[in-house]
Image 1 (cartoon, helix red, strand yellow):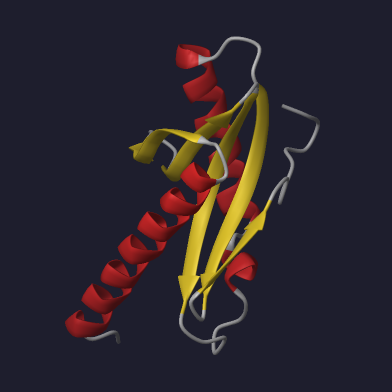
Image 2 (cartoon, rainbow, N blue to C red):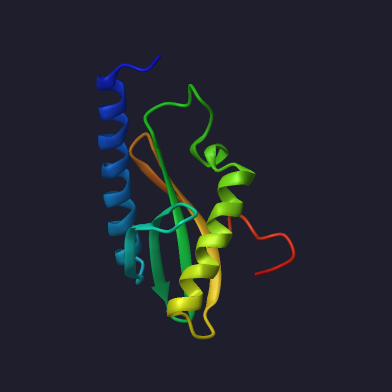
Length: 124
């Protein structure tokens, strides 16, 4: 059983990681289109655009690797939910954007941006 303090600590840590990831993306020339975007399928941590590319970004923040690397937490099920959410978002907002699914790891104070971290089965 997880104690409430641990859950609050994790949420706070996650928010800090998402802020750091958004700052990182802005420095790299991305425009942040949305943060914590709720869809019927899942919540997308960050949606960012640079040129014709719209990146749907899952942010994983860790202080240690006791439970594996941050990128390992993006399961195939989570990936499928991101694909569905991206289709819905693009149906409402998109033109002929190039869609990409990224992971940003915030781990031990460092940021690792994994572009094209996962792909939909059968294409987008």
